Length: 196
Image (cartoon, rainbow, N blue to C red; front, side, top):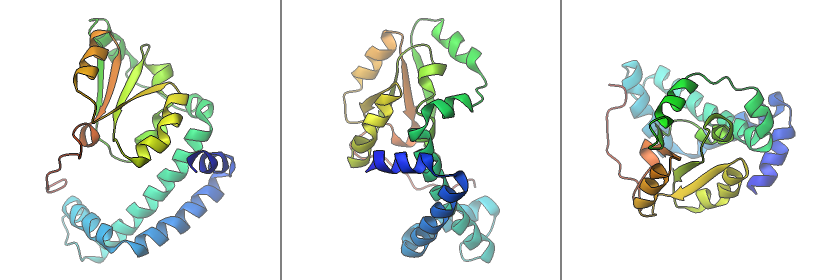
């Protein structure tokens, strides 16, 4: 299913793909009141408003539509990794080289904000050592695993023993960790006041 969607999504003109994404995003926004409420609570903190404010509700709708557009971009990136690489500007490569010069491997750490999968084709050409991403151990991760591997990214499920990542680093390789998706059978989560 993912391959078929990536094939079609990467061949559709961007205008068409984003128009279809807007339709899908609108349907998701309408069908998921719980998601709207969670986003409203978080976005209200970011803008100093109340979750019921008209301005906050408009932001919620825009965010759900933006998620759908990111999904369209993901399908393009999966279907056209060479184009992704050719059109991406990379800054800070000297930091990767400096870290690897110590001979202890490299930890690429970030937060799982947005569609990180769009960039899966980049480590192979940006990081001069094999890169393993610690990912969720669920149906979606299994379904997309072959796409990650096809562009040179290795996969380690977060349910695997942590010693494996230590061994990768000891060999001088890179480990990609997304903070909210990095470890445990179920990710530990803590309710926080977003951007407050």
